[in-house]
Length: 389
Image (tube, rainbow, N blue to C red; front, side, top):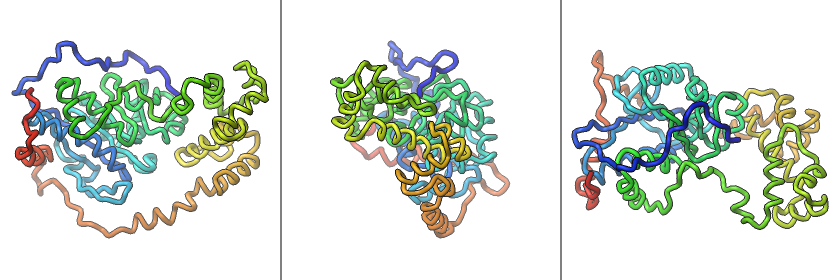
């Protein structure tokens, strides 16, 4: 699914000089745009490295603000509510804007988000995303021709909806002034990488030690554990067959053709799948196609007929039958959200909080960054200023 980006990709190598920034240099300022149902883990993974960088350096290298379109409470995917520091009308002098996405980003991204992001890009700010926040950037046209990482669940939908985006299966991608990461802890790896570029390996390594993060992954690491890591290197033919299956959803290759491609018999092919993947090759192929179909149903506006065709089913009734047998519901129910609708209603019916605007009446003041409070609290920690810069 990886495609080449347009234009030169920014080198991820650390500068050989490892030069340190001047102590008088202003802190880099990050703005984290929170979409409804954003994942709290991804938000923590981008903010915590910045907090720890300040603590270990003993000064404010970074500051950050959380942002929503109206400055009001935003609900995370786990139901926790976050009060942002600012709204779109709050004047902020940002260096980098990161969109934090989560569940169903296509429903969370509004016109106000795309317009604001386009404005930030016109002001030459570095733009990025974590988890499914890349959906907002793609919708704003800010990822065309850029290598982009997003959560693997959204890759199929983004590929269909935004074909000009150069999607990558890497944990994170740095392409010129775009920085994008997939979900979970991948944003932590991206931030450690960026901090190393800014302030050297020693600080980045010290942060990972504080977080008991044994292995910092690079931008060449992939999101999902590849099948070769499960099987090892002893079954190259099986790995090649699975790769062919994954690359051919719309026009499935027959099992005889797959066997010929890798120079094994049909019987050998079936034995390999039964021994190592515990199912027949046709069942495994069907699972791949149905999983992709589910992603398209849940994340795009493609019709059921279009989804069936994109996943290699010659007729909609046959697709519906296979889908029901595998997932326990027909594609139409999946599209309408039956089964999850009740959970969404309960989720939306939480108590109404008191929404507080961060702008004073008639006065536009930049809010105080949480970095200042965190750095003040950290002064009593034994690691405070333990990494000289």
